Image 1 (cartoon, rainbow, N blue to C red):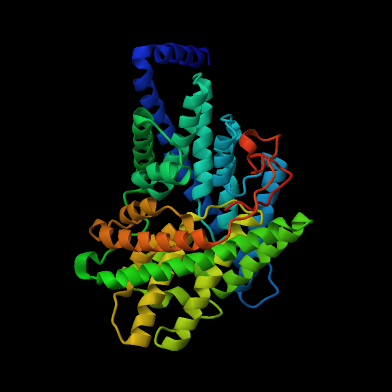
Image 2: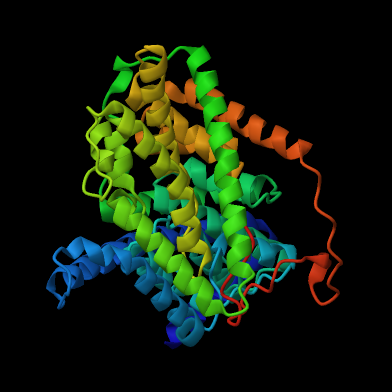
Length: 473
């Protein structure tokens, strides 16, 4: 192992020279990107194999019910409890709402993310989603990528400013890998984490995001997660795009209200086990009604944007054929509302998961509902598949409040770059509506600053194993 130490010291000396600083940073960005991309692949595999194991238990374990689907009632609860156990006794760190932990590290100017965070969020998220959690994998992989960047920066003796940059590079690379979307990874760091970067760090961020995407492609294949196969065979008038954006904005307000209300409920429980059990049972009940909410939901989203609207309600207790239009619309609207509830229960009651993929799922359902309502009430034939794809951008922009990221994320994930204009219009309209309503809402009373936290931040310490619920969004 001495040769590794010698090589590390030589690299430090080479990178410390003034003329080598920029190439050294770009080289480290490539390493971080490749590690984050491989981490994204590991997370996808972990979710898959845990789900396979969970389904095997559903069908092979002794049962007292007639149908294995009844186990869907308790699978999310098992996932949340296992994730909580992992956090409390193995990781000994709180990883709920991972993106908020990254923001807390940056705000507190604490750039020393523990090394074990490179793998712990991946394991805990694999458990949560593999056992039926209805959420995404983005926050945990961003956290793992940020930890990789922090670790490499500390190993090679970067100063505090460059450590901050390395955390942003790692987080963006994680997002780029999990979505196979390099531009989305760059915009996550700049728009969601709101990090200010100079030219060379931005170049390094772009390079890391590209390396992460290419690495994930190398391990998983070149297929898109949400391929849009209809091409330019469909079109939608711009006035309908604007109305769809308003519809997505209104739904985003409802989604955010449900999320904030449930987070307050979970945080307000004096006994944490009440939050864990109630969240798991609520998520399980919703999953029992709508099995299509299992995990991230990419197969169902792909069906919606390619014209298979009738399959979204198949297999559940509330299965309704598309031919029964009135009932189908009511049940689809119920699914749209319950998606927000299932997501917040999966990623705020103790489970470790992200919140980006659920907004895409909700957007696809919202666009489908919009098109079917237009036909049922107004007699107007709108392409439901195109509405579903465009509405994914609208819902993401309104819920995550990242309109630019939503535009490029949908374009890259679907491959439908020819529709970037309507996606952009829908996203901007939705975002503007949400921000406009937010500006009219009276601001909350300012909290007293906590002198024990840097910069008067009110966010809880990033690694507090004694608190597994949070009110951060």
